[in-house]
Length: 114
Length: 113
Image (cartoon, rainbow over all chains, first blue to last red; front, side, top):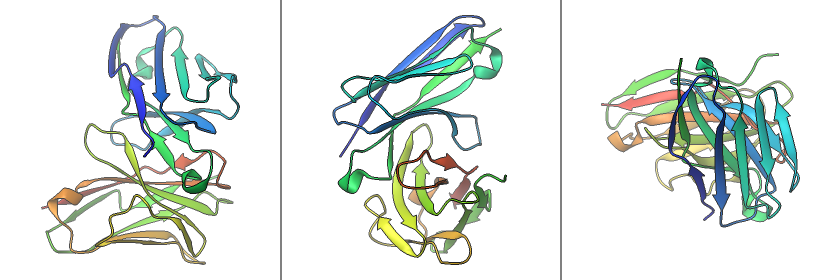
């Protein structure tokens, strides 16, 4: 089945620093999504990407859908303490049995030191 | 506009009992997905339903697990004869259609004693 490799697994940064994380896949995806999950809560959608090469921003967040449709990255600029959490990438397949369901990366645990 | 609702938020069952997890999608959403998350892991797809139909159940264990999304009322994920390995967080997501973004509920944390 489809698998996503997300890196890094964890990051420890100082407040104000920029953060970058990425996901790669052996399969093509039609859609890439980035979510943030706080402890005890469900994932919250941050950014959705629908076209290869698309670059989208949401405040201090920027994400790109790779040209090959097999990768995506998320950047967070000028991190603040409330950015702490687990970030997940998710891909939605290109058809057939892949329609609908999301395949998730393993997550990046972000810790921000004040 | 209310988000995806799930209840209960926490459920404790003894081995052999049944667990019923409920999910009400966002208003205007007719596509529902169930995912399972084990501790320290990402979410794993279980089943995709559209009103009264199971579209994709490729991620759901063949035995003891079932899901439905009736014409009226919430979607139900049912686990019969629970075992300790079923302990996990179960998340429901909904979308307007199958290619639109999915929005998640707060999850149900199932603990099997």
